[in-house]
Every structure is written in structure tokens, then in C-alpha cells.
Amino acid sequence: MTVETRDLTKYYWMGKEKVVALDGVDLKMEEGAFISVVGPSGSGKSTLLNVIGCLDAPTKGEVYLAGWRVDYRNKQSLVRLRRKFVGFVFQTFNLIPALNAVENVEYPMYFNKAGRSKSERRESAMKLLELVRLEKRANHLPSELSGGELQRIAVARALANDPKLILADEPTGNLDSQTGKSILNLLKRLNEEEGKNIIMVTHDLESAKKMGKVIRILDGRIQ
Amino acid sequence: MKELFSLASRQLGRKKLRVFLIVLGIAIGIAAVIGVTSLGEGIRVQAVEQIKAQHDLTTIDVSAGVEAGSVTLITDSKLRAIEKEEHVLFVASYVKDMYVTQNKTAFWLKGNTPEYRQIHRNLQLERGNWFDEEKESNEIVLGYDVAKRLAAIEDLGIGDEFVAKIRLYDEDSRPMDKTRDKTAVFKIVGILKSTGGEHDDEALVEIATAREMDEKDAYDGAFVKVDDPAFAASVGDKIEGLGLSARSAQDVIDEVNKLMVAVTIVFGVFSGFSLVVGALMVVNTMIISVYERTKEIGLSKALGASDFDIMKMFLAECVIIGVIGGILGDLLGIGFSMLIDLVGKPFLVSALGGELGAGLQTGSITVVTPEILAAGFAISLVLSIVSGLYPARRAARLNPLDALRQI
Image (cartoon, rainbow over all chains, first blue to last red; front, side):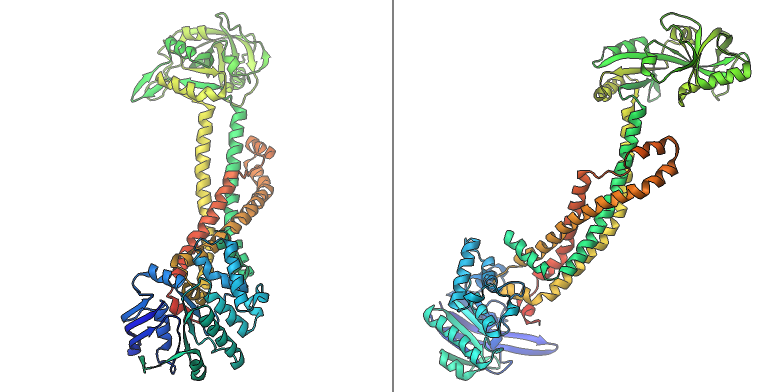
């Protein structure tokens, strides 16, 4: 699995002002890499993540996932890529309040059943909860859990459809430093032990350096 | 599918009061429709029952056929053809003419065959005897009103004889008493009890006597008795095939049915307008729900949900609302129709009065059929789904990134 971007460019308009979010980004990610993207607010790092994650379309340029060029005009193929190749972790956890921990982990599998029965899906969701060491919280609703626990469930959810690529957008941004560290350790473990490719956007340069390769972005360009 | 609905019910379970209010809104609309249609259906059933009680469904009333200006008369050969039809027990033919006494008292006179009284079993003598139908005679039985008139004006009673002749009418419907001079002498032998119907104004006489007087080649009418009400329609069609006109109580019932079904549909449609309110509530609530859950929708899309997946989720919630609304609406509708029966019946009975009101007293004026309940349920379901289409589509088409950014 490699991620490659070629001349990736993204503008958008804020009223009459043209905002350049990405300005010709060329990125190559080797198999098994952990890339941290750092940069100030508005530098375009989140946009890069969203374009790679097929949530946003570039104005210009190309993205290759596992060697396949992403066709941003084909909505169905974007849905399939999001289902099978990408797992998201968000700064604000974004768990579904109506569902308990294990159901939240199971939720993406519902859109990508891949022949798995309901009980098989529940079983793999439980295994993912064990992986993030929250199996005891399986039946708790998000409102009953702490921030660190929520983010670990969110990480387990990102793994639900066994994606090759995990995109984490400031996963520690809403956590205290101690809890944040445990999430980073979890991601590192997934990268090293489970072989997940990870791209993480962060403010925290010190932590980023410990994870692997660091890319700095400023005004939509890689420095 | 099961998972879809379990998820949808979980989502609805988070806002029970809101769901309860929409469901109630729909259910009240459905109940109104059910109540009104059950009233229409109840009155229809009552009307049909009354017709059945008052008419013999095995009797077909045959008269001369008029089609495109040509008249087909009831001749002996036609009667023989009818008698040969399957399921026909007998045919009672009659002639009917307006007679006038020497003192210009007019009355209808029917000459009938022995079978006639087997058709009209409600004919009972108040006084006197029947004439012998088997042989030609001048004996006459007077209808209740005719007897009263003749007694009052001409001082005639049982045992008296009187002279009468046929009264014909000119083109302007003016009597032409002078055209025929042939007279007959009738002897009054019996007087009928009042029937409340046509027989009160008629006098009955043996048919041969009457035919001799009117000198017509054809009969003025005939009653055909069939062995089973189920065959009345088919025999009636065959009689019509002979060019004659045939009517049975079933025709009246058919007309009442047609009228009441049309009235009920119109009532149902208008009471159904209250459902528009329910539908708008669903639209409104689902749009609010889409706004509230915008972020969740964006998240679901990021996690791999397609537009169709999102649409299905919202529609599943609408299906649940529709199902609950339908069940509750049916239950409320049954209650509503009971209320109409309880409150509305005494009012209807007193308003209609007489025989019609008395007929209503026995039964219920509302009838809730399984069809009405099924229709109520289906309307609720369809209404909820249709109302949810726009909000669901709106949810499905949200841009995932924009949706995720919303807090």
C-alpha cells in the first residue's frame, strides 16, 4: 500500500477571497509508514487528509491509493474507497450517541458487510475493543465514557473494515497530554504490530517526531 | 433489514416525546378517516338491510322495454320464453288500467293471475273475501284507499256492484272519458288492509276480466319469481336480452351501494385533509432531525455510508412512525366510530323518524370493516414514507465534509 499525490491543488472561495488550501502537493508514502503532518492552523494539513480520505475533491492533481488513481467524480467509487481502504479518527471522537461502544465499532461494518453475518460482525467488533483494551466498556453509551476511552473506541472503529490506511485528524487535540500519549502509543502499536499505514495531522511536533516521518506544511506547500 | 429498523428505533427512542406527538398527529387523522368511512359503511349496510327486509330479492319486476324509441311489449310469447329460463319458478303477469266510475271516481285496476298473490304476500284482507282467481268473474277486491274513496263518494261497500269504464288519456294527459263506451260491472267482495304502498290505490280483479276490458295484446307488467336471490341478476339479464326491462331489489341495492360508496369516498377524502397536517408534521420533524444529525450523517458517510444508506436510515424511521401511527390510528378509529354510534345514533334516529329511524335503532350506524382498518394502516404508512422522502433525500445529499464540520 502506498499513498501518492501528484501536484495536488485545492482552492476554495471565502466570499470573494480565494483560499489556497493545497498548492501542488507531491507526497509519496511507503508501505508501513507513519507520517505526521504538522503545520499552523489553515496551512492545509486537514484538507490534505480529507482529499486523501476521499471526503473532499481536489481542484487539480491526482491521488493514487494502492496504485489506483482516485476518480473524484465517481461518487460510488469514493464510497467504496471510504468503506474498504480508509479509516478515520477525528479530533472530536464523533461517536454516535444512540449506540453503545461495541455498536459504534460495528457501525462501519454495517455499510461494508462483506458477507459477514451480524454475529460475526459483533465478534470482530469485540476483538477490536479488546485491541484497544476497552472490552469491559462494550455496553456503555458514549455519554458514560471519558475522552480517552471515546478516542480509543474511535480508533477501534477506524479499524472496523480492516483498512490499510488510517487517517487521524488531530486525534489528541481534545485530550489531556497523558491521555493523548496513550492514544499516540495505540496508533504506534497499530502501525508496528498491525501494519497499518497512518497519516496523522497534529500540532505537536515533539510527539510527531517519535512516531516516524514528519512532513511540514505551510500555505498548502510541503516545506 | 432488521438491523436497519433496530437502529432506526434506537434513534427514535432518543426523542420519545417528539415521536409520540407526530404519531398522535397521524393517528388522529387516520381515526377521523376511519370514523367517517365507518359511518358511511354503516349507513350503507343499514340501507341495504332495510331494502332486503322490505323487498323480496327473488322477485324481478318486468315491464315493457323501451329502447331507441321502439317499445317491446310483454306478450304471451315473451312470458313463455321467460318461464323456460332456468331458476324461474313462475311468472305473475298483470294488466293495469285507470278506471273511472259513473260518478267519475278514478282508480287503478289490476287484473292479475293466481301467482300474483304468491309474489305479494303482504296483501291481506281487512274485510270480505278474495275472488276466485281460477275462473273468470267480475268480483273485485279494493285497495284500502280506493275502498275509502268509493265508500265516501259513492257509498259503496262489500256486496255492492258498480259500473266502471277504462279512462284513457290524450296526448296532453287529459282524460278522454268519451273515447270508450265499454263498461263493466264489478262486485266488491273484499277490502285490503293498508300496505302503505301502491296497492292502497289499486283494485284487484281476475286477469281475464281485465283483459277483456282493455283489449290489449300485451301485459302491462309481470313479476318473475326465481328460486334463489343469487340468480336474480342473471335471470334479469336474460329478460333484458328479450328486449324487456327488468328490475329487482338487487338493482336498488346496487344503486344504494354505488351512491353510499361514492358519498363515503367523498367524506373520507375530505376528512383525509386532516392527514395533511400529520404529513407536514412528519416532514417538519424529519427536517429538524436531519439538521440535528448533520454531523452524524457526515460521519456515517466518512465511515463508508452511501447516499442510499443514509436515505434508508431516515426512511426506516418514517416506516416505524407510519406503522405505529397506523396501529394507533386504527385503534383510535375504532373508538371514534363507537363514539359516533353512541352519540350520533340517537340524533339520526330522531332526525329521520318513522320507519327509517326505527330501522336504524336495531343495528349500529357505523361498521368498521377489516378493509377500512387496512386502508387506514396503509395510508399512515404511505403518508409517513412519502413525507420522509424529501428530508431523507436532503440528508443523503449532504456533503460529508460540510456535514462533519458542523457542530
